[in-house]
Length: 337
Image (cartoon, rainbow, N blue to C red; front, side, top):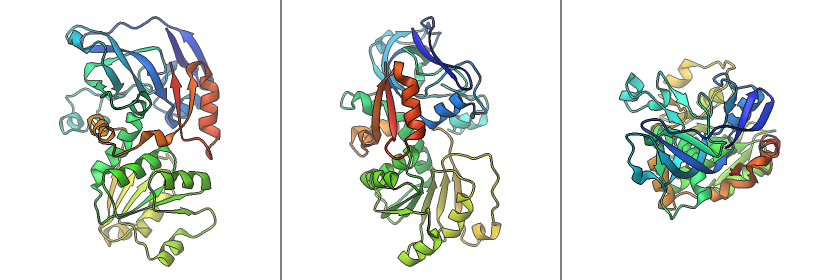
């Protein structure tokens, strides 16, 4: 089989590998398509501290089960499935309280173990989620990105009274906007970014108002508009954002952090406690695949709006370059196998 492998930072090859055989409790998926994520580019560039090389990347993938290991029902063969990249032990404290995404023995497919940028992949049967036939192949490939939004939203519990502000109109921000609009029905959504084309995408995906904060004071602009956000999601993850979000938030607001920067930021405890703010962090997803598949089945979200490019897997370097460099026109890039 052909696999896309990062042999070392900056060196990507498409190589021939043996077709893997499913171990007991595993299934094998013949991959049809896979999505490129920023973390894939980070592994390619050597900026992911968790990655071990060489590594087959890719954690957003869709295909059909074509073989099963011992202990798995043969009836699973032929199922259309998406793969949850979170592989957990099931025994530690986080797993026992329903948070396998921060398992003490966590393995992420495409980071700690070989991923879905390959013609075949094996994974635990519980990680292969059936996709109904009313969800297209392209939409199915987008389930994993929406689980990231589902994870933070499930913690923050958005509601009809909320005025939501999203920092960053990239893929994470846009999936969050779609969820807040189509699933949770919040009162108003404001998108903040420094690229006008990204802000235009935010409007298409459900934002009511967009703000380019390149040359303006966001606090002054929100005061002028008479807006105090009750729910803020940081989908850009610059260290300057969290202190600003704390200052801008309404009393009793919730703030969610979708990613991370290793650079420090300075927080004012009084600013948090005086308004009794709640701050949530989110990593990957904690069993959110069934939730997102249900959203798609009910047409509460529209993943196709995020897909801007598709390439055959042999064009992966071109695809990753576009994803990395064309932030004005590119959102989600899919590879076909």
